[in-house]
Length: 324
Picture 1 (cartoon, one colour):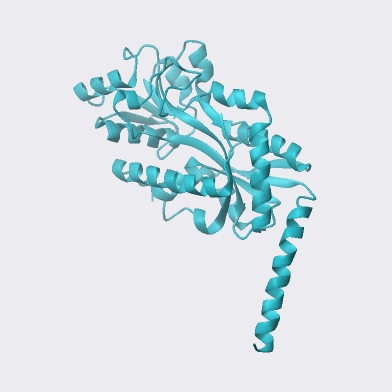
Picture 2: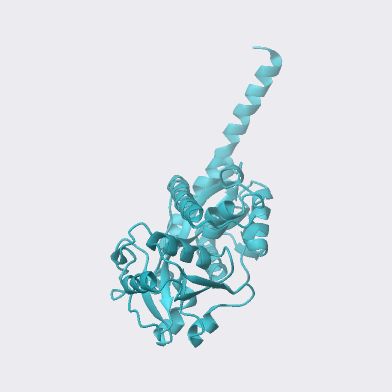
C-alpha cells in the first residue's frame, strides 16, 4: 500500500470512528425544521405540534421556520442545501415530493433520492369527497352514476391548477371514467364558495372542512382507506363506490439533507417513534379529521415514499396534467 492510500484509509477509519460519538453528543443545541408552508395552515400547525413533541424527547428546542413560496419549492430547496449535520431538517409533503416532480419535472430544483434522507413520516390524512348539502347524491357511488348520465354536471372547487385538491379530483375522474368541471381558486380558499353552494364538491384532506361538516354546512360523500374510518363509520369508502385503487393520501414527513450522518438519522428516527406515541390528545386530534399521527423507521418511510411516488405518477400521467 502506498503512503497516500494508507493515509486516506486511516482518515476514513478515523472519520467512521467519530460517528458514534457524534450521535451520542447529538443534539447539543437547538434544531430547526424548515416548513415550506404558510404560517397558520394545517401542515404548519402539524409541523409545530410534532416539533414540540420532538423537543420533549431530544431535550433541546426544536423550532419551526416557515419558508413558503413557489408551491413549497423554496423551503424544500433550502432544506436540500442546508448543512447535513442534523441541526436543520425539512418537512416534506405529498405535494412537494410525490406530486410536483411529476407535474413540473423541469422546474423542481431538488430530487428526493439525491437531496434528502427520509427520517420518518409524521402523519397521514385520508382524502375526502366533501359536498354542499344541496347536492342530492348521498355518496360517491351515486355521484359517479350521475356523472355518467350527465357528464360535467358537477363543479369541483380546487386550490389551484396542479394543487392537491385538483389532482385528487382528476385522479377520481379518470379512475371513474367521468367528466368533472374544476374551478381553481388560486389566491383564495375555495371553502367559502363551497359552503355557499356556488360549487358542488371538493376533493381534499378533511381538516379544512371538518368544522363545517360538524355544523351541517357540508357533508362527506366518501373517504379513502381500505375500510371505513372509526371516527366516520357512516361514511363509505371510495372502494365501496367501485374505486378500490383510488388512494390519494395527504401526508407530511421529516427529512434531513443528503449526507447527514447515519447515526444522527437513526437517533432522529428513534425520537420520532417516541414523539408520535407520547401525546394521547394529539393522537386523538389527528383521528378526529380522518387522519393518523404515525412514525416509521427511515427504511419504512423510504419504502412508503417510493410507493406513493409511483401511485401519484401513474394518476398524473393518466389525467394528463403538466405545468411545465
